[in-house]
Amino acid sequence: MAPGIPAAMERPHFIGIGGAGMSGIAKILTRRGAKVAGSDSKESPTAEALRALGATVHIGHAAGHLADDATCVVVSSAIRADNPELVRAGELSIPVVHRSDALASLMQGLRSIAVAGTHGKTTTTSMLAVALTELGLDPSYAIGGDLAGPGTNATHGEGAIFVAEADESDRSFQKYDPEVAIVLNVELDHHANYASMDEIYDSFETFTGKIVPDGTLVISADQSGAVELTRRVRDLSALKVVTYGESETADVRVHKITPRGLTSEVTLVLNGKYLTFTVSVPGRHYALNAVAALAAGVALGIPAHNLASALGKYTGVKRRLQLKGEAAGVQVIDSYAHHPTEMTADLEAMRGAASEARLLVVFQPHLFSRTQELGTEMGQALALADASVVLDIYPAREDPIPGITSTLIVDAAKAAGADVTAVHDKTTVPEVIAGMAKPGDLVLTMGAGDVTDLGPQILDHLSS
Image (cartoon, rainbow, N blue to C red; front, side, top):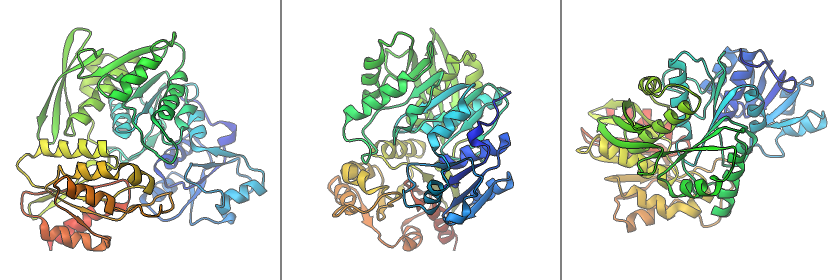
């Protein structure tokens, strides 16, 4: 039986309850019996799903949305100090709890797995959630995206395991005390919060230092930042380190990854024995995510062959190379990739899955700070496509930075030999792509913002 509700979480109010991380915690609390309320800026399927579970969801932000008897107000790092509900919480002396602290409280008393790393967290966490559910272990989980099968980003299970996506972007992953931690990669990102790789390493060292005594760190043997982190934490006496990857030195070594259309077949070597299983999404990046998930499950004592079979049931996560549909012989696929490493991985995966097809990309940069630091690399990644359309920067939580526009990416892409076009009016993109696409082409909408909304619109234009 999973633990109950912490006293501070009996009547929580979530500001931004529709967000991926916030909604997951709200769903779990609702299923545990809490009286959940909150607000979000706009209506969404997530808001409706929360209401169906019994939560009260207000649209818009106003002081009056906060009930006087709320036991806490839950916020993320994106909530600004002048939010009227946050101001009202101060007036009422209602405790304010960061999202990460709320999630940490839900994980207490359970065998937790925390998945961290600049790229692949959502996919790897999802793979674990699906596999453990398939094995009848009924885990709880909180993920930054909706699973394609269950269609949800979180659930309260009655089992002893809790799988959580651990966000390093604002250092909130340092709040968790996992039995098993996965570190997929360590790269400089989230430039508004980290000024250097030294700060990144310090943050990840703090995270790994929170693993419980005799716990396990599962970490990439291939990615240079992860290798450096492994070197730094090897001497932690109570920590078991398990490396995975294609490196000959990996404890869980990938022997071969074989593309099979939009899937991959993975053969690995574990304890001297070969094990082969199928991953439902294409590309080396996702295959390695599956190996990390398997290694984490083994660290909890679950037999590897059972995990391998269960991982084959994973059917993907929304926005992670998700097929949105096909029209006029053109497939439209959606990708959440917004960092150059992620972009390259997804573009290479699509190349491997359909080597004869033309690949057309609609890319929306995410955050001014990220574009300022990595705009050149984003443009270079787009050179892997046959043609690209680049939209204006999606600001999310940031204010504009003078002189920083998507032109940085367009210029870098052209310098790398890419066929790229800047489009400033997003509403014209479906017509532009419909005019470019031919039967047999693949269209990839890419980015962490609202570019995902264009997929259905492109399909409509292709069908007309």
